[in-house]
Image (cartoon, rainbow, N blue to C red; front, side, top):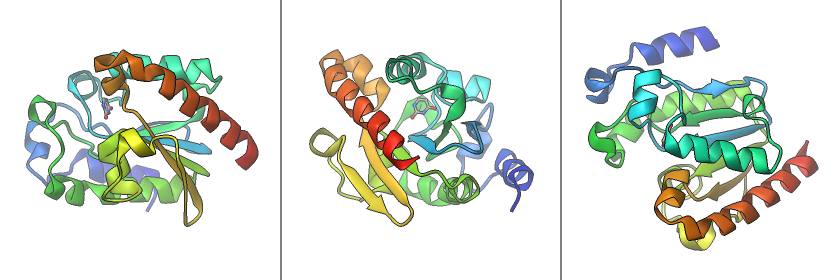
Length: 183
Ligand code: URA
């Protein structure tokens, strides 16, 4: 499948009820040649309105951490497990993830990144392992097939608990090192 076919299919998707309530499908953004891919949970309000992932307050915080470790946002690819916003930003339902996950799978297949970073628990549980514990296992590294994977705190969580920002910086610095080793 080509990028164009994939994006068209996603933008017209009604495989789950979120297709009826979205303003925009939030497909993904960034470099299609990225070595590094970030995967969040689902679009929030600002993302739904703009069609771009991580542009609200959480996204701005993510930008700060990227800047802090010298990773230009335009060099990475950023997507979510769900492409449409769940009402009131509730957690994605398993059925919604199941309906949507093939879009992400295809994005990964087309990009073939070396490193995949899960942003938060929901993404880590889906992509690394179902019993992933974000407080215990953030910053740990996993080799999965061709990919090196890790999970860091979701930036929205850091907004609620700023004390965790120190851990986040440590994880992001390690990511920078891993990236330098892997590329
Ligand atoms: N939170 C996410 O998980 N993804 C976004 O795109 C925005 C906020």
